[in-house]
Length: 146
Image: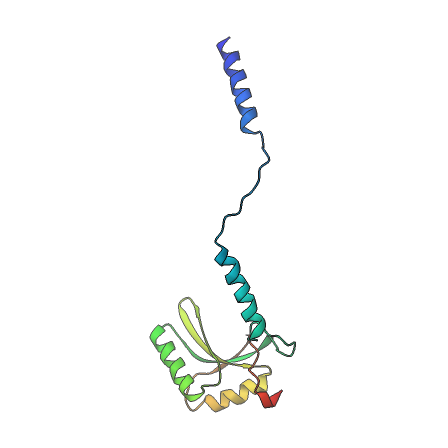
C-alpha cells in the first residue's frame, strides 16, 4: 500500500515538474548600449572603409598577394614587415599564422600580371617570393583615379 501512495506522489510531482508556465521576459540593460550602437551606425554611414564601402565601385573578391616571408620566428616576421613598410609605405601587408609558421603577404592585386610585376620589383630586397591567389581587399583609390 505504501508503494501505491509513493507511486501516486511521484506521479503528481512529475506532473508539476513538466508543467510549463507562460511568462514575460524582462530585458534589463544599460541605456548607454543603445547610444553606442547608434553612434557606431552613424560612424559607419559617414566614413567609408574597405570593409564598409558606401559605393558599389569597391571590389572585394579573389585576387593575388605576394608572400615576402615564411618562417616560425615571430620577431623575424615583424621585422620583415617593418622593413617592407619602410620601403613601400602605401602597400598593405598582412601577417597570418598557421601553426607552426608565420606568413607575411603584401599587396592586393586584381590580376596575376600586376602581382608578378611587383614581385619582380621586390626581388632585390627579399630573397624568397611567391604569388598566392586569395581573397583580397579593395585597393585604396586616389581622388584623381576615380
